Amino acid sequence: MRRQTSDRHILFFADLHIHSALSPCAENKMTPDNVLKKIISLGIDAFSITDHNSGFNCTAFDAAAKERDILFIPGIELQSSEEIHLLGYFPDIQTLNMFCSTIVKPALMQGMRNDPARFGHQLKIHASGKVAGEEEGMLSMPLNLSIDELVDRIHDFSGVAVAAHIDKGFSVISQLGYIPPQLRIDAVEIQDIKKIDEIRLKFFKDRWLNIISSSDAHYLDMMKPPKMRLRLKSVDVKSCLDCIKGDGAGRIMISAKAVKNSQRAGEPSLGAKACEARDWKELYKRT
Image 1 (cartoon, one colour):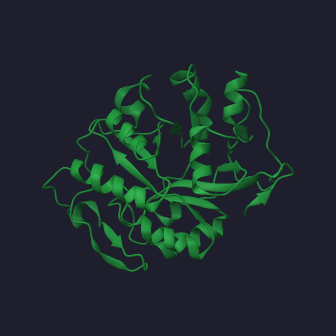
Image 2: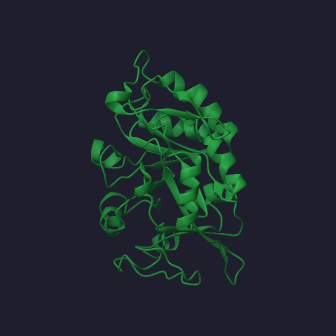
């Protein structure tokens, strides 16, 4: 539930890494109606659908979110030629669709067809919410673009590039062993927030990068109460994207469990307990 703070900022819960039934590794129940019901039950105010190498289902989720007054951020999870996962967020559906048609689709491995029996179905959902068929091409394969090229192309389309789940496999760290200083990512995603201090000190202590934490849910049961809150002056896509990049007055706060008291916005020193809310931009300035 969105809450207004005394300084006219709005605090709201966000989960910016959720897969729909289009991702072959996600369950077929990940449809707009089911996902939105779960989102509402968890008190999530803003979310993004980030399917593998496709943004097709975002139109249907955007329409469903508007009906329920939930903020939807168009997104995608890309797999580079190095097999690094990268999240891209865009200002609107039209921009995401243009990015997919001009950058992603030509970069897909041509001639590779998905085998639903082995890899799972790739359900395309119409704007009405009904299944409109299946994507025949295999979406779980690497694109023929490097991580650097993908980051640059996301920026060309006014998008935000986030290194996905850097504490897991298929990440920039698991594949390369480090975060290249020249890689122009806007933020990193860490799933296990108990590892945030360790990873930050080891891999980007000399470089400020915003940190987000989302569920990476592929199943309805993987969707949990969100760990991340955004503190913004207005709840819209642009403000969210600026906040992820670290632009403007917006702040990201992460806690080990959903914090119900919106007035709680502590800024502990590095090494404080993971259950405390953290404002990463301010924390970086102080350290």
